[in-house]
Image (cartoon, rainbow, N blue to C red):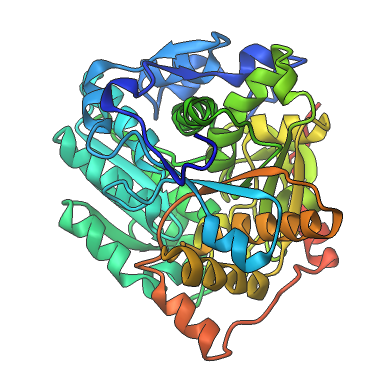
Length: 455
């Protein structure tokens, strides 16, 4: 079976449980802190999340059951295929075997519904009527709009303004699924109004959009907040990607040597990498030398240039403080086209593993990612989302190193979504309007100077 190019699972092989990496961490994760610097209480978190989500956020259980109603909706697109990129291998002349897990088969065209569906389910179970959220490139907003429709919930999305204008078709997807969409910063919230008063041309950030969504959710008893990345429960839900991939590799008698995934908030990286790290923690000899590499943009280099410290998850300090790699909560990234990778922080779990040297992180420039995405599309047919192009770039670089060394490594990357609604980004790339941008160290230092003082 090692020559198979498309490895598929049956519906009855959709995992029945999500995997929680907290159970296998060398040391327990640092707790989120409230405004008083003490561990946040369930009551503080419960203002915007249902109880079942909070239980998952705090759980140290290794396996958490997937509700049957969620698995039934997953069947609309899962299990997702594992594909060997044979044509890309030939184009590169590499002895490496390149595989990708293709998450673009979901209704929203990305991996995000893996968490949107259970979040909507648990909120409906708690009697919640409305959901608020933020979105960057629009994949998460599309996904929660779809999931809200599945469970009869109203959805309001605050979309980062630069993406709102760059990606109108993602906004239209959200509206097709019944969601309201506002460009953030907006006039809908106190946070948005204050940001616009300071800078009427504010292009927005994920941190700012989170502030708007959290402010609204905290102010209404019928409304909860949903988040598409970063928090433990989101990474938990995304573990279905890696769990399926493990089954698929078992089917063909192979195992990855290196795993790559784009990393903004950390959900797609954790989703594909953590189940394989479970093998490493269990002493599986196949995983002994496994490398897991998070790939981020040089313009928003959270893991590679940020500081490992407590910081707010949003721009205004509404959220609890989390121990993570951060560029500072008031960091304002440039309007790069990988909108899903423009977050100032990162998953506390991904951050902890990176800080402890159990995973790696690299940053790649914007032009090189589009070059990789075009090469992939011309060989494999799928036009990748700009976020996914980061993982493709790093995978290609590794495959070329294998070409030099002659090592026949098995490489796996997470193709988190298709780029059908990101073609304006490709248009700018082809017309020469895109440029590389390394975020200045002095600007990062200015932002980090505003980190909250803890302890």
